[in-house]
Length: 141
Image (cartoon, rainbow, N blue to C red; front, side, top):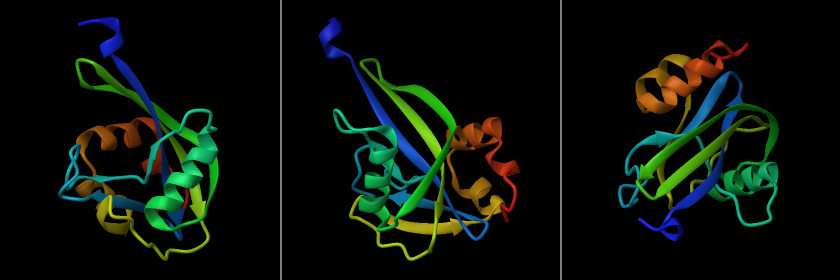
């Protein structure tokens, strides 16, 4: 494998809280990566874009929500294949409302309690939530 065939993708995600619940979205069935899986909203940063600006943009595009971006909750890195590494920086976010307008990237959404998150999220995200104390957040139902 040549050095040029490797890539690193940086993405941002938001743990969006509204009235003690966290928003997760389910990827559309036609999605090439992770079809049908639940995740936090967010996406790739554009070249030259700030992390928080990218997160606000991605959340608005995917959910129609305007959020206040807070502190970094955790960062994770993994290989999607031998030549592609993804780095995800996940932030705590607050929303002033719970009216979600999904983009075509996602098929469904849910404002979840701690118990619902533990049932729906994939094991890798659950492990990141546990490790970073997301489930211990004050006010989380």
